[in-house]
Length: 145
Image (cartoon, rainbow, N blue to C red; front, side, top):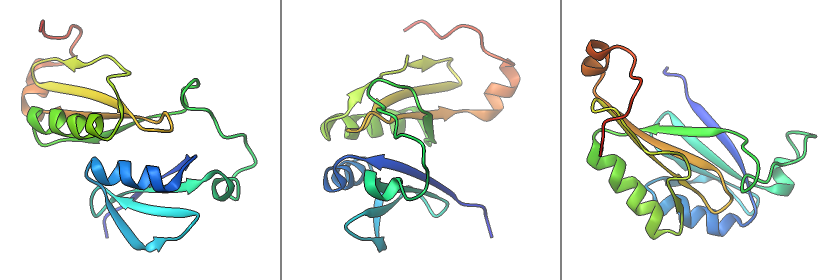
């Protein structure tokens, strides 16, 4: 069985967050959804658990970071092409996301953009041509736009 990744995110408005994640392409799993949490799947192995603050506090005694002002984590999803990167970021924009809170990345063989969800969590969407990346070695400068 392949390993799965479950990303647990505290959210201030569960319904708003469900709508946002649906808009960027995640599918809601009703089996793991109630008034305190919702499982949103990006693939068979990547799931985001949206948790109300009260529910999130059941799992940790640490304060919940305000992701609008504090960097907690950078989350990244792969994409199949440069166009898929832009398409997902476009869907996020239409759903109300802040676009490109981290610098755009364009190394020719690797391309990435980012968006910030309604609670300030930053998602990077990346495409990479692995063979070209291996041939190029480690990039040091982005491609001029």
